[in-house]
Image (cartoon, rainbow, N blue to C red; front, side):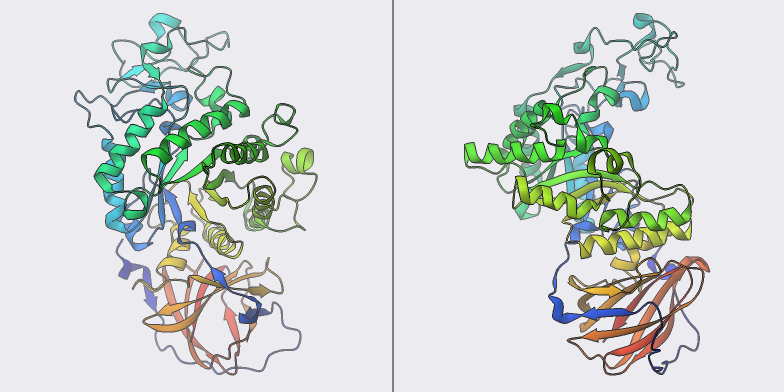
Length: 525
């Protein structure tokens, strides 16, 4: 859908006079320029590449696009194919007789460069990678017998492919891993980075900037059980990470490396008894710091994990954003109950790990989702809240899984920040400390920037209630006067933004009527 179909201007929009601030009106919104501003990373506005609509990518001005997920763990760039693992009957290959080395990722980089997005590439560090572009599978029925589930599509190599679980429930073992795999080597991966640099330039010169050290390695024993039936300890994961990070840096010294990129909750924890008494994320940072101390070279640039919000209804979905930051909110996950013994406070907690074990490392969530799949207004409001929190909490990179359709409500959350008027106007790049008296009623995020060449404050207001909220807004350190444009997306119309009547500011104050169940951009001159 092109931009002009996403936006509607209210007929007869007029400037609203500024009413007197009510003494006890909730919630109050304060935009405080005296509290110290700071930059917002453009890389927090990221998505996975699989299924990403290229027109939407440009329209939403995505900062980063991630080539990652389970299917990239065993990717062999020389034959441009991987193995799906347990996700799809351990099927490998792409069926091409003459594959183009790195063909798929190369095409992604070309598209990302055209769209102005950076590319995040996953580098396999698992000990085995796919060997051929020809279709193969690890658990052929002719060799391993009938299994509980088998690939419903046409046979591969005149054989059916199973899910590795025998009819009696026994987990089968792959007794011939080299049948369709080759040993992974750091030289193979450095060769791939050299190829990418040769075609697209170094990371600091317009080429691939970000490289991720595999995908959810603590889960190899599940998803990739054919080649890693016993999984990997975090000592192994950290050692492999050091080895392959060094290979990436050798091929492109300007590249930025992310890891360990592990799965929600369990992947952060690992086995503390085998990790110097530390959680997996802490141990990984400790080992990467030890590598730098021993070699004088930094191998890890971003501490990166995955996060899937837990909720069972729309109200919980809107509350779950508080797990990212709030010391007063307990999401009641098992990691909070049995390990942290406290609210999650995910971003501050991870930042404290970084500060303790490997200072100077940036922070990323390269895979996250708060999407209910219901294509609802709460999807849009929750994601808009997440993006605002990412900027406020100084997250350095984030990538949502998986990309929405351009018409899904959650897609409009990205447009709110990256193209709220359909003409390319964006939320500011400098965060201005902004508070709401009650963040669970109306969340507020302010940023300084420019729109149409004029200096403005862009103020996001997210009403999570079913009633209009009349919000007194005041500024400190600035005294805006005049008309502020207001763009709104709400449950009243899930197909487009509407430009509402302008809001009048006088001496840095106004009262804003925030529509029910809506996300809004106020452009304050």
